[in-house]
Length: 137
Image 1: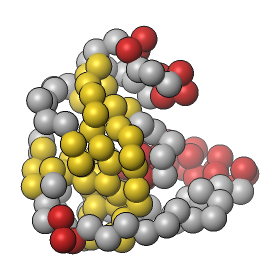
Image 2 (image 1 turned 60 degrees about the vertical axis):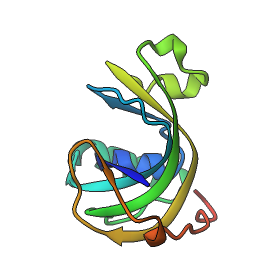
Image 3 (image 1 turned 180 degrees about the vertical axis):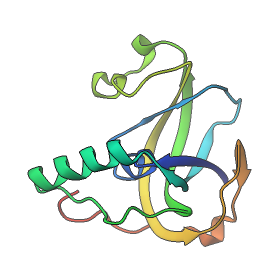
C-alpha cells in the first residue's frame, strides 16, 4: 500500500474523518488505498485549538497526538485544483491548493510506529489492522 506522511494534527483529523482533503504542492497519477502516516512535526497552535474544541464538544481527541507512525488508511480517489470541484461543501474549507487530494473510505488503524518519508512511499499491507472508531468520535 502507498503511504503519505502528514503533519499533526492534520493526520489525526483525517484519521477521524473530519478532514477529507489533503493539500499538496504536487499531484500523482496514483489512486487507491493510502496509509496515513502521522509525522513527527506538530502545528502546535492549531493542535491546541482543535483539542480545546473537541473537549468543549465532548468529542474524542487523543492526548498526546500519535506521532511517527501509521494512524489510518483511506482511499485517494481524485485530485482537484479548484475548491468548487470538491463534492462536499463541508470539505471545501480544507482546500488550500494548489492540489487537493480527495480521500474517502477512511478507517482508523492500530498505530504502527515507523519513520515517514517524503512523497508517496510503500508500507507492508500486513502491518495495517483496522480498529473501530471511539464511541464519541
